[in-house]
Image 1 (cartoon, protein in one colour):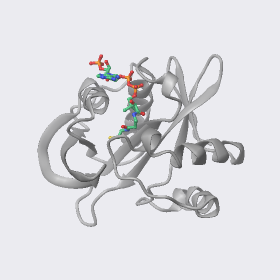
Image 2: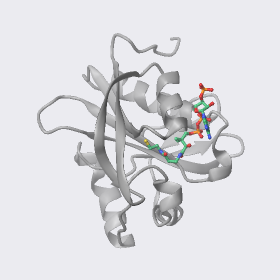
Image 3: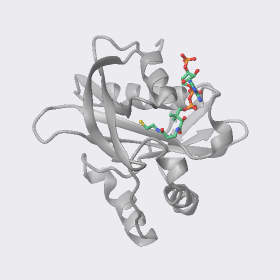
Image 4: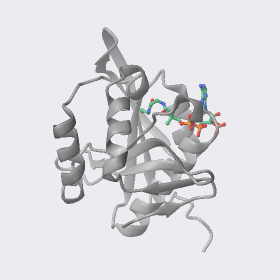
Length: 181
Ligand SMILES: CC(C)(COP(=O)(O)OP(=O)(O)OC[C@H]1O[C@@H](n2cnc3c(N)ncnc32)[C@H](O)[C@@H]1OP(=O)(O)O)[C@@H](O)C(=O)NCCC(=O)NCCS
């Protein structure tokens, strides 16, 4: 089992007991998708997608829960997926489902752990992410981790009744700052 520890945050695979809480977040568009499109799912297909994610680089299912270390409390989920059928990069995504956990640096630490894990365990040269241009916490999280804004896709995402522009971010292996050995 892969467990990734930072100073305040632990990433670990989802267990069966995490599924209901995470699924409840998935049913609240203002938690999982305040700046994103929202789609519903059944609990059974959600459970099946989590179970199948390991063998599927393109899976959008959550790969790790984000837990605080002391006391241990599950506050969010993160994932990664092969984002393009031809180009060779992986995008990361992240949600802190517990709203009271936001704005304390936990999201940035969690995504930093995930990104470092992807570089350390694979041969990837680039990790990417996209976010709605209005999603300031996400923009600042990515830029704080050293991601560079590579462009902006206009009218690329429909949610909350209108089209939104989306920033494209990337971090290359040579730009990353690995943790001290
Ligand atoms: C995006 C998200 C994961 C960020 O996690 P977080 O723990 O709240 O963010 P952090 O506390 O680590 O802060 C990251 C940066 O955003 C800034 N930030 C956090 N909340 C902010 C807010 N409400 N407004 C403006 N900036 C904010 C922080 O100051 C920090 O920037 P800094 O390093 O320059 O100071 C979280 O807000 C979330 O779950 N949002 C809903 C789901 C979502 O939008 N996911 C991303 C889709 S692209």
